[in-house]
Structure formats: structure tokens, C-alpha cells
Length: 233
Length: 278
Image (cartoon, rainbow over all chains, first blue to last red; front, side, top):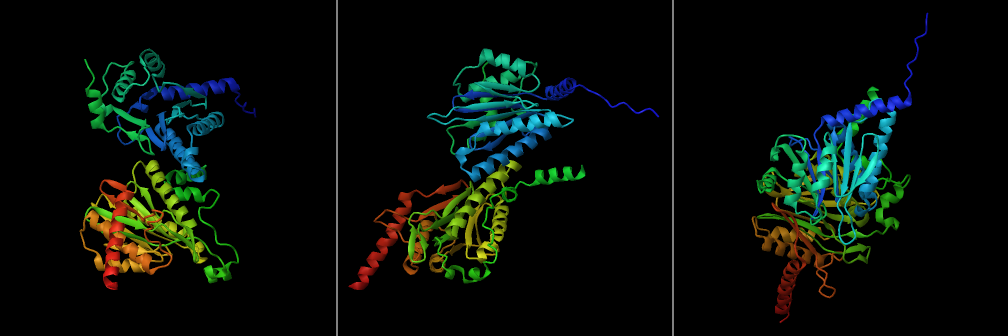
């Protein structure tokens, strides 16, 4: 009886296939942008659900955003909350940093990409608002394979991230007030599509450094409508 | 494969920080020392003298709850600390006041704060007030072995119940027993004296000013009758801390305002004492 030949797939091919699989999964989802604005960092996602969030609070100055497969980035989000709360409880609240969390995500996603048959179809963003006098905003973008980048001024993830980044490169300005930043973020999300986004299609939150300890705040639909309503012709 | 999936699901389901930290080191609560039974039975008599918090109280008023505590910790007959804080914000709508051995009490308050915030972040919405009160009961029960050795933690938990639209007060015993008080409660070494004052002077539906004044009366009585409880200290400017919780959330009563009430209570007593001497 002839022995069945074991499959051989070269490592290069395997990684390429996995990466393509993950990218396709992410590209199917809607996009998300983060912008530094006058009072901190703004996060805007296209998300028609008001219950299943893409943007969430991790810790006092740190927020999380994910695109791609919901159950996968939700898992990462909870792991992040656990990491942050454990660290803050063991040491001090100041010792919880976006950098450490971003590295932990990078390790986790890198390991999953290498070891698991199916890579995670997600990209996540970890942002931290800096407090005066010497705090700086930080934004870390982590890809499905654990690649980590730190971004300045703005970041985009999801299906149309490339086009959105190009748009923001031309239109971003420093220290925009909230209303302008929200409008810019929403316009950026629509660059590749022929529709306007209203408050019911959007999930918007800020890390506002003027707030007390917990800087994270969701912008409720009514307030968002007011912010978008001021948009000129 | 099945086990792995189950483990993942069990992990995923628990929004409790206490569960999480129990699976890690160090232990949040001191484990009972082996063969310490004999010493434990003797409790503090075995030479274990630890800083202890003294008097705390809570009372309901028209808009919510007033909570207050004196600022002293004692070690036997010594003052361990003059400015300790015994009433902590637990979250936006609740507070925990601690009496008992200071170390584990403060640690429990901190763990409880983290627990509530952790739950809120993981689940996306906060616990009900009743849920918070029950969770605290479980935490006190976890501390039972240590409590048997003298490391007793007995908090008062109070908050504004947004669903019912009223302030609520919960008291606990060493075993984690949880009981709701309708109007007011005080505990700690001067608790009994404060309770007597509250019982005599309490009026249902009193105003914020009346509530804070009553808290001041009760704490001054506790300080007069109990050596461990500190009264207002005008020399160093240390006054008991007073907090309120209403529909608008947790609020520190400004020190100047609390001070006024304590000074008024002291002035009334001074006048009374002089009147009596004449």
C-alpha cells in the first residue's frame, strides 16, 4: 500500500497565506480613525451597533480600538483591561502605560500568527493621552501579525485605511477643537464611499485630558448630532 | 480541545477583579498562618498591636446619604495616625467607610474600588447597588480566616440606588453577613455612642445641613465617650471627613463646610458646660 505523502508547504508560503487571509478578513470590516486634537485624542469608528463597541476604555489615560473580527478584538480588549487593572493595583495607577500594553498585544498577536492555524483577523490601536507639563500623546497601531508601529497626529485602521491615511495627511492640522476634529474624522471615514455618515452610523469617544482621573468619555448620539450639525455646506 | 475551550470561556465570563487577582500572587488577603490557632484565640492579647480605625457612620437624608468618619488610628493606647482617611469613594455612586485593623481595611477598600471599575469596564456597565453590596460581603467572607486571627475588617457601604431613586446603607459583620439599615448606622470602637446619638436626634427626610450637623454631633459624642476616637482637633486643624452621595454622585463635603458644623457643635457644648458651672 503506498504511503500518503505528507503535505509540504514552505514557511514563506504559509506566512504569506496567513497574512493574506488576515488582511482579507480585516478589509471586509469598516474603518476607524484616531486623531490628536486640542484636548487629547479623538476616536471615530463607523459602527452601526450601539451595543457592540469598537472603542473602549482600558485605564485612566488609555483607550483601545479594534477593527476586524469582533470576538477576537473583544478578547484582546478584556485581556487589556485585566493587564492594566492588575498592574495598577500591584504598583500604582501612574505605572500603567500604553507602551507596555501595546507590547503585550504585539507579543500575543505575533505568537498567535506564528503558532495558530488561523491568525486573528484584527488590528488594534492603543492610545494614551498625555498630561501637561511633559506628557505626550501616544498611539500604537498593532497589526494581525504582531507588527507594531507608533503613530503621530493621526492613525487609521480597517478596510480603507490607506485612502483614509492619504486624506488625513492632506487635511490634518494640529490642535483642532473637538468639533472640527470630529468633522474631519467623519469626513475621513467617507473618502472611499459615496454616502454621508450620521450619528447612528458612528461610534465616537475621546480621551479628554481636562477630565478628572478617568479621561475616557463616549460622545452620546445627541451630542454627536450637535457636533456634526454645525457642519457647513 | 474541549477543556481548552471551556477554560477560555470560564476566563472570558468572569468580570471580577477579585477572581482575577486570586489566581495571581500575591494574595490580596493575608492567608491564615499555619498553627497560629493558639495565638489567634488570644487575638491582640498575644502581643499583636496593630493600627485600628475607630468610628464611622452613615445616615440617610432627603437627597441621599451622608457618610463620616473620624481621622484617628490607634495602636493600643497610642495614637498611630492622626489624619487617616476612613471614607473612600468606591465609584461614582457609592462609598465605603472602614473600621477595624487599618492595614487590611484600607487594602480591602482599594481592592473594592478596583473591583467595581474592572467590572464596569469589562461588562460595559456598572453593577447595581445591591450587586456591589453583595460583592463586598463576599470579600469580607474571604477575609474570615484572617479576621479569626484578629485582622478584622468591618466596613459600612452606602450609595445612591439610581433604579430606586434613593440612598441606601449596608452594614456587615465579620463573617460577611450583609444587612440593610433603613436610616442610619455607626460602627467602630465609638460606634455604640454614635448610634445612640443618631437614634435620639435622627429625623427622616432631614436636609443636607441637618444631616451633616447630626453626623458631627454623633462623632463628637463618640469622641467624648470613646478614648480611641478623635474629636475635631482645632489645634492642628484636623476635622472628621464627611462625604455625601446623591443622584448627582459622590461628593466630598468641603473641609470649610464640615468644619463649620463641628465648630457649631463644639460651641453649643462649650456654652452648655459654662452654663452648668455657673
